[in-house]
Length: 211
Ligand code: GAR
Image (cartoon, rainbow, N blue to C red; front, side):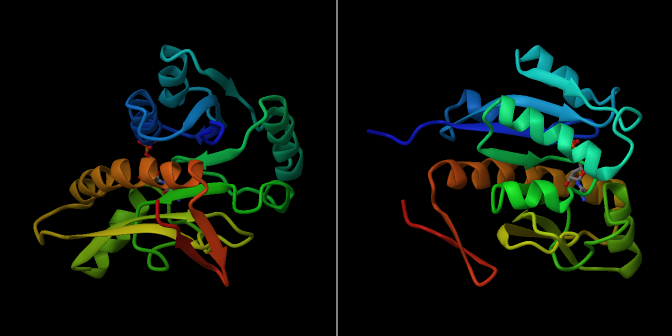
């Protein structure tokens, strides 16, 4: 008997191209999971439309209604319990989660970050800012990281990383485009491993069990 399909919530703040890569790979049965909920802090996030187009519950949780981080995450927790969520994926979600959620979902929240952590991570490093900083430092490689979320900012155990060489003529926008292609490979793969119960965290290191 196979493992039960994991129920997945995806949190987005913007365009949701990473959400789309998950929707596409779910369609391909690349992982044994089902995206049952998409939540955004931004009512105009295109990710919410992508969810609706695919008949996935799409919910905007407004900071106006839940003004502190704790109240906000309490609301998210209620939704996760209601939808019986097993895995939470932060896919371009530009808020930090509070210990409330991290304690309830230890090593069950994963984040995609558009750099090779621990470089270019932490406070202020999100979206194009990351690639701007990479460009300004003249870095010769960049890439993407998928990691479990812990109490720090982009500090949790790394699940997967992939590097790319940077062409010296690339502007930050082009670095972003190239890194996004990597993200769209790595995030579904991390979800696949999670759904197959193949990720074990030991001493802050993630071991990927053989299939
Ligand atoms: C992605 O590049 C993701 O790695 C980044 O935001 C972008 C969202 O794109 N996340 C962070 O910077 C988190 N610190 P998308 O909405 O098209 O998936």
